[in-house]
Length: 383
Ligand code: PLP
Image (cartoon, rainbow, N blue to C red):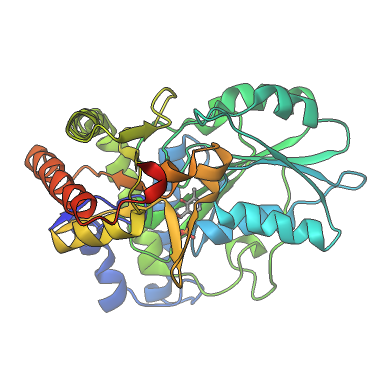
């Protein structure tokens, strides 16, 4: 089995599992209990907070633990409010945990939403972004790295504009954490979201950076955990796992250059072997692990299935619900021709990916797409 779906989720690293185990079996106290088991759990949480702060280059005091990236995003998007300001600026390629929340807030009349387009290359329209940020703007929310294409947005450039105009900047860095360096102060983000399961921590744990001096209201109220911002008994083993995964990610960041080398090898191999394939976002700065390829004339769901049968796990960049096929919002935003958009596949590597797996993947993609084309299932439109 070859797993190339690491932007969907990653395997929990063995070192992470080992570090978490004692917090299930031995130090299972409630971190707010006064006895030694509680104190031990709380020490573990605070140590993990420092490890996550170190990954982001920020103070541990600015880190709040949450259940996932979706929750971290929601806390900022729903909880940050400023009198007299109701415009929120975001991009057309955000994850649904940003776009759907903002659309909901806009339709409830709570905010005015401006969605900035991207070029067919995936490049953000910086002129439109700059023009949209004014004295009525409450928040700008832009992802650091796009989950389907890996395209990296110019956050420091955006932060220069938001700073100058006194506007808060939220960055969804869920796909970037562990793959590229994250110096959050230098980047200029005021809020930043990460999620454990994208970099070898378990599912169900996330974190939110809130720059000192910024205030958000919690999504719900309770017994005041995490400074009252995220009430509910802490998921201690998950927090420990996130901390250790952050430490490992920081120590092993240089391995991402090898991941980039493998990704480039995969890209070259696929484009050479499949003349009808094109890479998306390849002219832009990209995450080292991500490759989006459109196989013109084929259907992504059929490719995913054919590859799964051949032992390769990847994701489709297009949806198929009850037989109705639709390109992803990202492919639509990039104005991809339909015949390409519907055949878009995301290959996402990790530090566990090997060179042999990449060679085998190219062979299996050639076999899978060849079988689909010869089977006559290629769409009429693409012929
Ligand atoms: N933001 C981005 C860019 C993502 O890719 C994802 C998940 O795929 C999320 C947010 C949501 O993260 P989580 O699954 O931890 O809720």
